[in-house]
Every structure is written in structure tokens, then in C-alpha cells.
Image: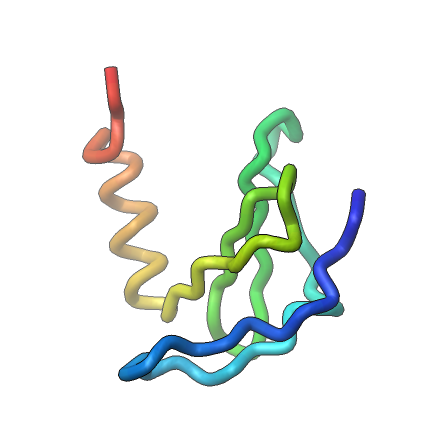
Length: 80
């Protein structure tokens, strides 16, 4: 699988640091069948589309990640 060699650039007003994701240890879901990958980098959580690793990654603080995971478990993002 291709690895991204770009540095994640912050947006204007973004309160997160610029993260170097080129050596991140990207992990897929437990089934290994999805395209979503996450990596823990410098105290933040990065999420990317494993099918297009050159695209920008989403960056979460630990509190944001916890809220995302809890809401996902509660079905907030179910589209069915």
C-alpha cells in the first residue's frame, strides 16, 4: 500500500500543529477490509482514506476523537 509522503498542512485558524504523517504507522479496522485508516501521531489521531493516501487526512485531538468514537458507537453517523 502506498504511503503518504506529504506533511499535513493546517487550515487558517486551525489550533492543531502541522504533523509529519510520512512515517505514521497507519492501521486499518479490525476486519482489515475498509479503506479508513488511523494513526497516532504526536498526541493526535489522524484518519485517512487508505484507498487514496495522498489525499488530506483528518486530524483529531484526543477529546475530539473520543467524542467521534462515542457518537459512532451510538449510531449518530448511520446512514441507513
